[in-house]
Length: 204
Length: 202
Image (cartoon, rainbow over all chains, first blue to last red; front, side, top):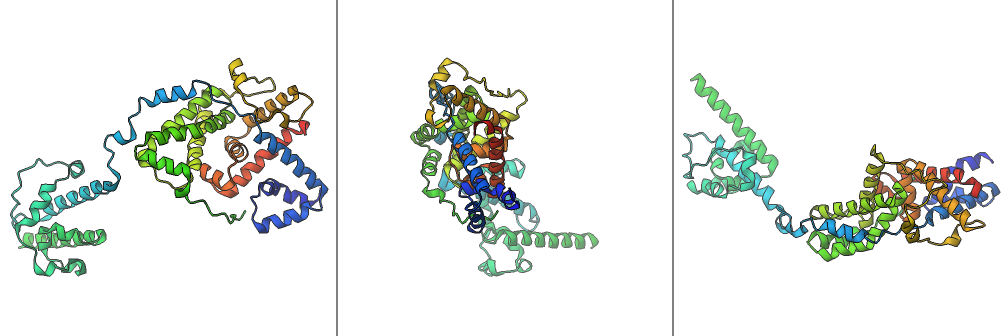
């Protein structure tokens, strides 16, 4: 056995399986065509592979399928899974949940003196995450109804966070037109302004 | 090993994927069709993997239950059989890793669990196994099973999928969540061990 045989040995199975790329197959084929040792090894490997491939197949027992379908009877039908949203509306729950959380966050940031609380029946304070699935839709609709949106907010997408007027907080339907990253930047900016104002009020 | 210039088939054109999408939409007949089409192959795969037909049948049933339960979240990213064998391989690996797994150690004396099982085993082609008699054929079969039992599980999985189930290295790689290069190595090492242990029959 030559050094070439030893080098090519690990490639022979993949060679037999047709799993070598062209540039890998060519040197193996070239060597095998002239090496009796490797050709004999290929015959043995082929035989072993055939034996494994032709292992007797085991058939399932007679009650295999019946047992399975008995087990399946305990399974709820796919279409009846509780909480399974219909596919076209899958995005609705997370989007509305995010909108609800955002609206609650915005409302909590508005100074009480700046905007009167919307006339929404008092709801118990619950964690935002717990409230999200129930979608506080009336609250979202109630906030912007207080007054019309300022004219400068018509092209809200084009404004920088620092240029967005505080009135934006009264109009979450406009705020939600901003990309998520810009919403976060805006919230950070408003929060910073708010802290600054509180600091000035405290100093005064 | 360089990647072969083989474009993976489009999952959307796979009949198994089409059936699975129907299952996802609540079509019970599609699930029955998938079970009838593939359960026998999974029992056979699991049998060669764990060495016991009753356990293989349990594993195959568990695999199809998993598929059914996963149906609402199913997204076609590969051929259905690739996904199926990935689940089956994981189930078999879990089985052989269980401390209470009784390694069957099928030996030369191995016989199926009972007479009925023996009668139901369908030989693919009795004449394909060389030897002077049926006894030699059974001895060879028992020896192959014994060597299979002793292979590391990942080598066993790769060898069975590529040889018994006729899957390409790429498909095996996807089912085992590894690379084609790793599959090439696994199949080579498994075959080399087989060739060494079966030398007396060659």
